[in-house]
Each structure stands twice: as structure tokens, then as C-alpha cells.
Image (cartoon, rainbow, N blue to C red; front, side, top):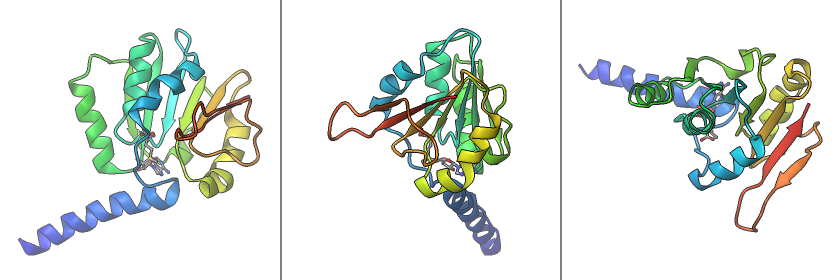
Length: 172
Ligand SMILES: C[S@@+](CC[C@H](N)C(=O)[O-])C[C@H]1O[C@@H](n2cnc3c(N)ncnc32)[C@H](O)[C@@H]1O
């Protein structure tokens, strides 16, 4: 029985540690920033939205509610966070959402119109920027919450007040 609990705890630790070193640990974006982020995203009917490392899925549900014709996808590497998203989806009216338990760095983004990411600057620079350059289609947009993506030039840096986190917008 003890061994069972030790294994569960180890599994949980691994589930949080691997994503933490891959892109970022789970640190949710502020809910009060959702309207600001999605005012910048300007989602259009039938577009495809991704959150790379979607945590509890808050951006995905918000996007799906704002524009019900879009496809809103959340990619998450941590099993507990993925299960939370799936549970929330069960009770949500937003069925234009989909969650995938996978490494976001392995998700092909060629169908994306808007990509949201909240990851650590060094990981953005070393693991994400070249992928975005290769896969994002013309006219698509990447929104990086809190941190700039070194190697890309933002078209907008939205920081309306000193105490607020910047939202960086990149156009492809
Ligand atoms: C800083 S949190 C952001 C969560 C969410 N996007 C938000 O803004 O509230 C980063 C999330 O990315 C996940 N993550 C880290 N590396 C990942 C990877 N390679 N693939 C998918 N998810 C990853 C973490 O588990 C965590 O939930």
C-alpha cells in the first residue's frame, strides 16, 4: 500500500517536473488579462486557436466562448492538468474545444491562426522560435504572455499599466 502511494507521488512529481523544464511550470495567466489578450487576438469565425501548454485550459474556454465557430485547442504535457481540462470540458458548453496530452513542441502548427504561449524566455528562445518561423502560416499571429520571444519582432507590446504583465503580439 505504501509503495502504491510512493508511486503515485512520484508520478505526480514527474508530471509537473517534466513540463516545468520543457516550457514552464504551471503558473496560470491572470484571469483579468483574458479580455486584454483576446481583444488583441481578434479571433475571426472558423479560425484555429492553440494554447501551447494550456494549464487549466482557461484561455481555450475563453477563446471558444468568445467566438463559438472557432476550433480552440489546448496542448498540455502534464497529466493532472490535462485531466482538469477534460473534466472542465465535460461540464462546459464550449464543445468547440479540444485538449491533447502531448508535448506542444511536437504539435504541428501549420493550421493555426492564433497561437498563445506563456513560457519562460530561455525556452522560447531555444525551443520555440525556430518552430514558429518554420510552421506558422502567412497572416497568423502568436501572442506571448509576459515574456518576449527573442528572435522575433513584436508588432504590439501591450502593457497598459506598470503593474500589468506585457502581452507581446507577433504577426507572421
Ligand atoms: C506558465 S503555464 C501557462 C498555463 C496557461 N497557458 C495559462 O496561461 O494559464 C505553462 C504550462 O505549460 C505546460 N507545459 C510545459 N511544457 C510543455 C510542453 N512541452 N508541452 C505541453 N505543455 C507544456 C505546463 O504544464 C503548464 O501547464
